[in-house]
Length: 149
Image (tube, rainbow, N blue to C red):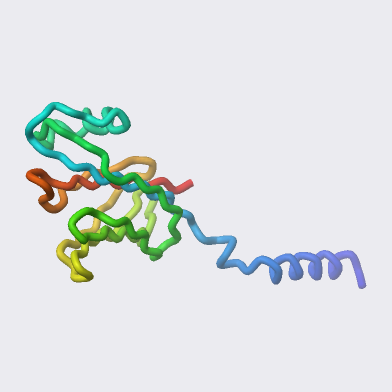
């Protein structure tokens, strides 16, 4: 066997050990922060002060409390789930990356029935905050951060 054939056998062996789809899958590091926002006291949890400074021009609440913070490493079309108060769940699914933009499908379910769904286009390495359902004389805000490297 010549040098070329030995090299080809070597690389084919490596490819068989590590199937291409496993090597090629993009990881979407997705962080979800569920925040209870209300009007009343002027409390802001220390871990979300910078986030609140960014969103307070849109959301006119005075009380912001972080109730869930979860980071997930997801693959394309893999759904990450986070439990929310009030028998709700949030399902987040990265469906594509095009250039510097990540597309996420977002769904909120209550008692296993869909009550809200949308799709967002998120700049890579950034976040978006969307208003969620009412909860305890306020609302749930959902901050979704996406990061693909």
